[in-house]
Image 1 (cartoon, rainbow, N blue to C red):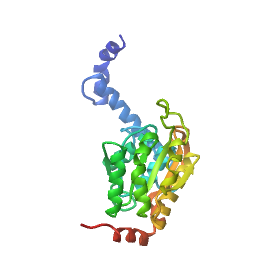
Image 2: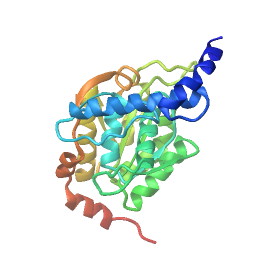
Image 3: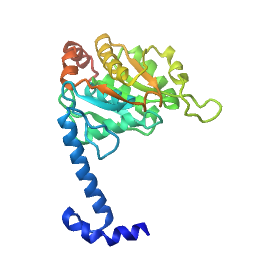
Image 4: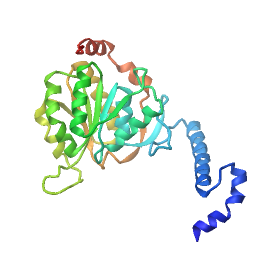
Length: 271
């Protein structure tokens, strides 16, 4: 009945909206108009629209921007800015990080290195870790996002990356391992399984801390040539939406040690 009512009022709504035929077109047209209003409101208040789905805007934080984002977006915001490549494979609750950087790259967002992030989805977390290791040896600053069983699949390559003193940051939304039964409860059994790999471990307990520690992780790894595992609670922090003062790309760029960047490029394997 409801669908019929919407169809009956379609002709009256079509003309002022300038949309095509069909209720779906009208709904989309209204959505786009609402989005435009929201964008103007946010611009007036110097805020950034929250990234939740394919129809929201990319982060281009001006200095002093404030946004309501979750822990995943806070980490992804920094990872996009300070990486050349990202190798991803979805696993709850870290999947949104990979989705966000993939979408921002598709929309043409330019990072601190003056380029789009190269994002590649592999066949599994094991493949993502292998590609991560290879790209680091080729002189790129690379990152990945994972959790739980996916992190365990990366452990063999984590030993190699640490042993070869490669600058790398892995963002982990910590989650229980499925030891007895499948579980998405939040604990640290996955990151604790990686203590012997030789990676530095940095934990964040809030959304704002996730952003700040992500920057610290990337800069420390770059300068000291030690891989860093940056982790925060799955769901409790990764999906907690909070008001955060965003650190813009120009500020992040000013922190980069370009001598360390050059050193990493110079040490790259070249066939």
